[in-house]
Each structure stands twice: as C-alpha cells, then as structure tokens.
Amino acid sequence: MPADASALRSLTQQVAAYCAAAGQAEHTYDIAFAVEELLVNAATHGRCGLDGPGEVRIRLERAPAGLVLLFEDDGQPFDPTAHPDPDLMLGADQRQEGGLGIYILKTLMDVRYERRDGRNRVTLATRAQPPRPG
Image (cartoon, rainbow, N blue to C red; front, side):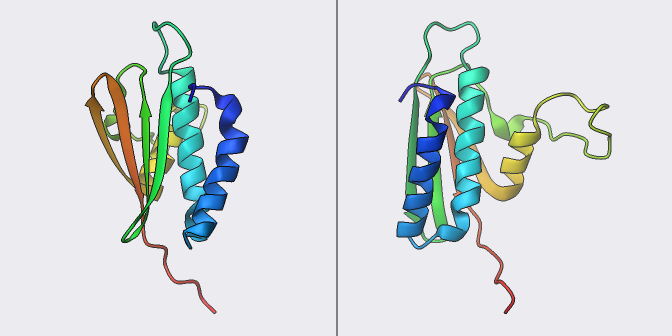
C-alpha cells in the first residue's frame, strides 16, 4: 500500500477487528498506535530525498505470547531501536522535537529492526498484559 497517512482510519478499524477475532482485544491500542506511528513516520520522514510516495507493507499475526506486527517501508534507512530516548526530566519546551512516539513504542512493545533488500523492517511484539483486578 502507499505510504500515505490517509489510510489510518481504515487500518485502525482493521487492527481492531483482527485483535478481536484473534482473542487479543487487549492489544488493540498498542498495535493501532504502532501502525499509526510507523506509517506517519514513513510517510513524513522516510521519503526525504526519494521520488514518489513510497510503499509500506503491514502484517499482523498471532504469536504464542500475543501478537506480532511486521512493518516494512522502502524509505530512507531508520532504526527506531537506535533512536535515543527523550530526556523526560526536561520540560517539553527544553526537549529536542520528535522521538516521543518511538519512545512510547519501545515502552509498549518489544521492537526489532533490520534493513533488508532496501527496506526498513520493524518487528514489534506485544507484551503480556498484567491481570486486571476484580
């Protein structure tokens, strides 16, 4: 699909439907957030200096401990696992702009990155949810 943020509403609905059908509704927010963050970053930053809108591939599948999201794009190389975490002790007006979404992703999910065949390949795995009281 094109690296275009206009597809977010449809993708979010598809994520919610998949999570519910897979019995993993508790992971809907994490997966939807990851898709939004990665798609917007690919569309906004990944195409700098490249022609055309670019392409992303998104696959969501069950895993023994939850769900795994595979996100690929053909943009500029970008390793989110190497991106420095923001200094949250600084005020918002003192921090460098950007990077908060990637930081949140890394706190919500297990993230792996590789560059393969000219594509960024980010694999995100959900973590077990703590039991809810009551």
